[in-house]
Length: 407
Image (cartoon, rainbow, N blue to C red; front, side):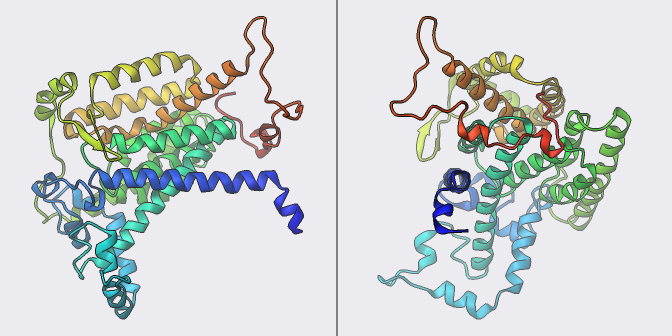
């Protein structure tokens, strides 16, 4: 490609700029997660110690059940660490800056990272999680595009969702939270295309990351119905459940001697914490700013307002998806979720993303409409496009052999 053509390619420029923006947003969300105690960074909570689950015990596979079942990233970190030359690890561990300070102590507040035993595995897990945040941002954007939203709307709704994510990691976040969302989005995309066979390896990996994928499988039914009959959709979900069940049985068997239980019940704790929703007690820091917890009456009322105004904007398939997710996720949250753990409502994230995109798209349409008796505002010196170039250059979903569920 000639150099002049390269720099005059607007579509290439927008694509590169979009991915650069996605990385910045993912990095900001990742920092917000670490600020909540993720990777035992800033604000690490002593509650994890009380629950028998720390980064060190996760890497050693000695954590209490059910946390030890979520072994995808720790096992990957251990496998990659085994491939690294130990001489290289020693050199990195002893590396110092110009002031003589150890580099790993300068860039990480984690006590686990400062232990030579966990040093390499900590940083492998660190970059795996950062990659998960970046991939989740990209996949969320493409999911919105596949669903039928324009690229600017998809990009903006994705960025808003990812920046909101640390607020959902109440009262703290874990390394399996973002990969869980990534697998949910990938599964939704595969279901929208009717590629149920792709869901089987996804189910195995997602269940290895967190056992919540098994009850998530029925939530995909409305998406599969866009391409398959009722009978084929039900059969596909039954087949997808098989690898998830097998992985669940496998991890429960190999970790059967770990302390703890197969699940932690917090229903009574949830009932006791209801008053905290009304009193806005126990403020927490998100992005380094002290503010009320996410689970509060004001946030709940605003969420209900958002749903009420956006409900008519949602396609029937998404409404059905929302109700199935709510009926499954809400009881699980009430019984198994720790008080204030908004992150355990992760099955509703897809509905939230589409709801955000629907509101943004509707808002943009309202903004484009000229008030009565006025002309639409056009920036001074703007070219007279018949239609916005970014939208007119978009490939249609129909041309790719896929019809949007919004159509």
